[in-house]
Image (cartoon, rainbow, N blue to C red; front, side, top):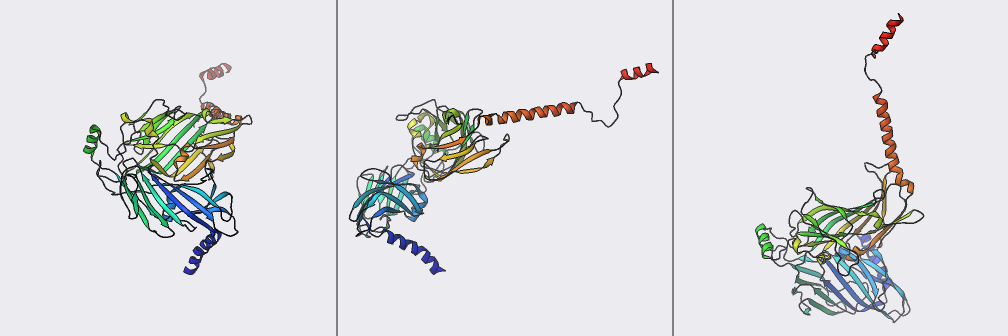
Length: 485
């Protein structure tokens, strides 16, 4: 059995190596950007050459280290000269294949940029600090870029936002915020490299995030409901209420997240903020604003948790609001409805007080979403449903869902995604469906008919006698009977 299992692993690898034999990475430069934590961006610039005598290569294979595959958020490949993006297909958890725009002829070279986005790759070091102490982080990775092709020369450049405090042997400091490892020739220099640096910015992780849309044609309403299970990625610290109050009045920084900022459309109304205990009254909403460089105005929903969130702490809540449906829905003459909705809503963590908040803080991309689910509950009578996504994936149509006032049930579109990249926050999904004008009146007619039947039954029931004794005759009847005698 062990021999069979080993063959199952070795044979696909040998096929991959034989298929890629002939391509050589002549030069590889990896740039690791740690300035936007918790997102880690890597750009691998590679010059690939076809050393085969006659074979023409039409694809390029990208490998990912096994320890980083679970944290991969986005992978894109571009031609460096033209800047055009290449189609990328996933072969397995550790291998992706990019399709070249034209075949690489023998002896030709091609420069590619492979862009990765990872989430939560750095770890706090030390893991336990004082409440107002600086946060230090550790980045660690292999010194050599994994590849199925032989690499002749490569180096790694690491850039940080804060000061670099330590790094592994073999690195050379290039200023206060940059370290260079290499160049390495061939397979020499293999091993792990580490960089320790300071970064006091807030870093959060949404373990789960569920966003729900409820479409109501009758009320012209689009209700939005968002569920969050949040965790702070910062180093742990013993919570000190006295130190927190001193920091507040002395205007000192600390490692506590006090406010959660959510950008909502300017037309948002009927907002609420609820956690597992109940309604949270320590929330506010700003007036209509417009940030520099943005076309759409917005409101800033300021959510203040019941307690400041320290490193390693969790907080679970949900909030919601209503929007005018007509702003997001277009209807064709053939009664084809097209609903264009934001794929995900952004949320930023902030350690500042409400009086110090600015719109720029709401654009801070400091919250990574691990598991995301989007639900769109369509009105009753929706049919011929089509969904277009801004990424490679598919949407599921759940069986009809019934509510307390449902008659025929409502269809729910469910979309799931993991490790959301910041680029997806500006994307939209398109849900198209057919909806008859008569379907809008189905529920009022059925409800009206139900009330009519109820009143008729009540009217008939009120005229019926349910006593066990025989009914008494009226006095007028008795007097008439006496006159006849």
